[in-house]
Length: 551
Image 1 (cartoon, rainbow, N blue to C red):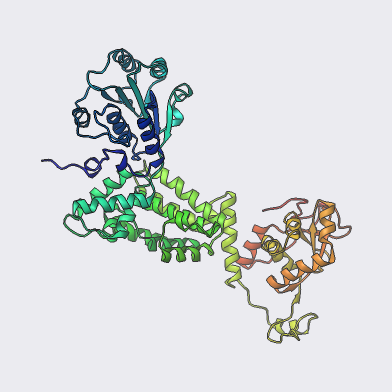
Image 2 (cartoon, rainbow, N blue to C red):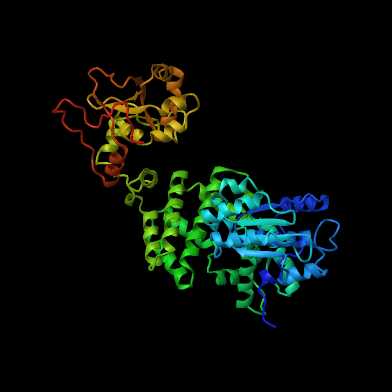
């Protein structure tokens, strides 16, 4: 006897065997028990969720000669056996993908005039009904609205948005949900026991997760894994090997290389996975899901049930969530999603993947806002780490000791006292303004978000001018208590002592208020290039964008 695939061998034959669709099963059983059977049903949902299976069970149930108390078919009477064997003339299955013309529907309209030879109902199961042509839908309308009392239509589709409204209004609609990982894993464990196959729980759960809510896909993947390691215990590593997927530990290493901007390290990890025979499209999909989990961890503390990861992996995700901001993470996901679409039709998949990894590591290759923000994040990280701090010129230490405001803090000798800010420091404060504003409390935070920091380039004073359009905002920020709060945040973050003054965009009198663009300032500091102010030959102020912002 030829081998039967698992998804066919274990296809449910009663309502009780249908998993993950309790809301639909309960409704249909109540209709059968009460005799309230509809004339047209529309089953919607993704692939492998049980639409056709439930349709066949319903077709047997309405024709069963001795149904069970809950409405399920007995599967033992002659009518049930004929339907199970596909020899009954009462149940007609039609594939709309290949029979989508007007003539095919006209044949149905002619056939419904004749009563069933055995049983009570003629049941038409039209699979992938969204594939019908416009003319075929129009031909089906009248029959679907007022069919003979012995005819039932069951329409199944994966794309309900393509069904005309006129058809939808004539059917009872049932939405089949994606089946949860727990439900699929429980079903797989049950079937493996019947097949006499030993498997690790972690391996079963990974197959369930890879099925993406489809029971049929889960059974097909499990069948593939069993066949590859026939007679052996199915382990997690073997499942990864068969499905061409990667363990999360590798994704963690890859992500850390990307965050550090280490393109060569990321390429090495990719080549290592390619040598191990990993499929490129699956690798990109799994890495995208890893980043998705990271994004959920970053934005919520109670999503363990949604993530479905081990406690160890959850700790790892929480650690990595602090290494990158949401904007950078969204950029990674966007680039990988675009790559996933390109790989479907690409001949050189590895080259495309390597190019995408380099883009992830080198945000300067992207000219959109997310790329710029990620670039700034990398530059700030290097600055904070002291990677690009220039050595002080000779004699500066002695001069610094004699300057006013410098020396030690008398209350805490181990800590240096706050240093009076110079114009160069004000430029750096401008670059870190978003971070500074975020450390203040409401309502000051809301006012500062609208402010454009500037400094007086002519006098060289240590006053930080905040250009603000709104009079009320300026009044609130100029309040002494709020000034002190902001100065304390700047002192804590930069070790610099500044004065604060909120001004109107056109205010300043003889002051030459200058706004240094963030990108220019950071690039200059990294390369060790001093920022020189341009001569004001034309009467216009360099870098002064009144009321504007580079963020």
